[in-house]
Length: 261
Image (cartoon, rainbow, N blue to C red; front, side, top):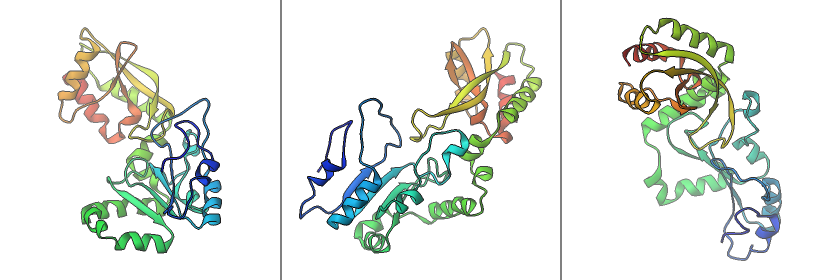
């Protein structure tokens, strides 16, 4: 049963619909969209209290499933599975990709008795991960255990790169581009994480702005035809490459493709 309205859902909306056949309380986190203005939602702690009171388990779908403190990287706070469990949720589900940075997968954590029941369900065999995904997920989670996620997981390496380093890389790229048809300059920009996570949140970045006799759309089309493709964005009628979205070991590819454009 859906409770509340699109923009306002209070704990009382949940409470008045709990009945003898209620199997669980579900809260879905807004991990890939924003609502502003006249909005309200029941907190996990409120729902956990209602869960205790009624004996109905609480399930929270977090969506992106970040394991690091996003505030340390200049973003607003994004709840982690650890926090939600500590707040009283019985089961938490989240993605193995997106902000976690691993292969595409769904992860369920929580109280042992509920997780074991899910694992014993016949549907689990249909939806279980294969060995390749499990192996990739293990390697990613080890980086978190070692405290090295921001150094070794691509999404967090990109996020953690300083503006000074991005500017130095941009300058080095421009020095190696010899294509006479291009007029390049270094500019300021803002990066978003994308991938259905941290909606509306951006952090400062450095962009390489391309100017030539070709239109930005023509440049973008040619860039997509390279192998590997080079994807940028068009803003202020210019094609731009956001260096925060490029790993340092890919800078040479950017140089080669700009020279070949």
